[in-house]
Length: 112
View 1 (cartoon, helix red, strand yellow):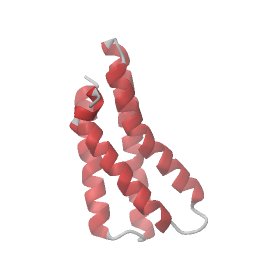
View 2 (tube, one colour):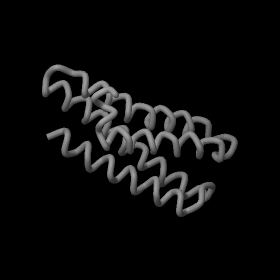
View 3 (tube, one colour):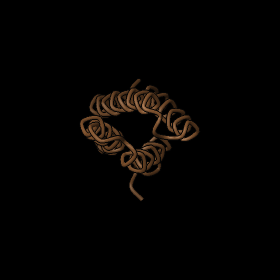
View 4 (cartoon, helix red, strand yellow):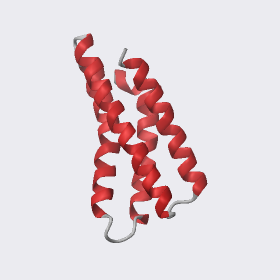
């Protein structure tokens, strides 16, 4: 097991990414730009967490955690758009949003 795999925030980010991959096919035609942005942001969260753990300096780690936090916030906005489109069941969106809130909270602490 690699060090980043031990972090709860990483496991939550992977769980959110799995949700994103399951929700992407539900986006209506014409929303490919949103799908691409969501996929990239959701993928960037665990990738930046993993990279942060591998950085030797505290400043570098905090910077990568901050980037991951920004990407997670972007995912939160996309969830709001997806809720507006009414294409994913509300209970699934509520779980995904709660997961993003948790991820942002943990990353905020890691950025300090």
